[in-house]
Length: 180
Image (cartoon, rainbow, N blue to C red; front, side, top):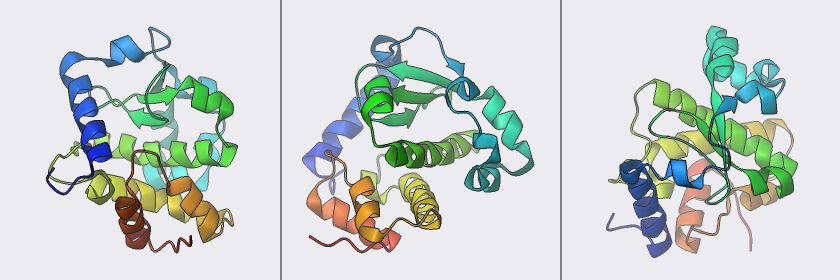
């Protein structure tokens, strides 16, 4: 954690706290999880998703649940149960391409969870964490397949909790050229 920016350290500590005190019950908009396919139709046909889960795509998406939250971030995967957590405001107001790429990014985390990987490994900063790099790389590949240029991909990658140095490191790691 020593090489983390204060914003990353704060976010990391909040995520760790959420795991300890089960804050997911507090921040959820709805008390129960709903099937992924109730909200995100057709993802079983998306090539990037099929490449991710292979022959198990329909089964994984059928069993995946979504929890809506009223606070915190954009999307994430609950480290306790592998559910997709989605900020309801982001779903309503976010750029559709960003929401789509975030779903792709989070589905990588779902797969990582299924493989037993540590999603919040504190030995790494957020932008250097292997699970994040893998998920961002997959989302960037999908963005490029859709024809997005690097400037737009940079816009997608940039988050308010990421320092400028961390953002530049991530973009560089992903091979995305971000201008000023």
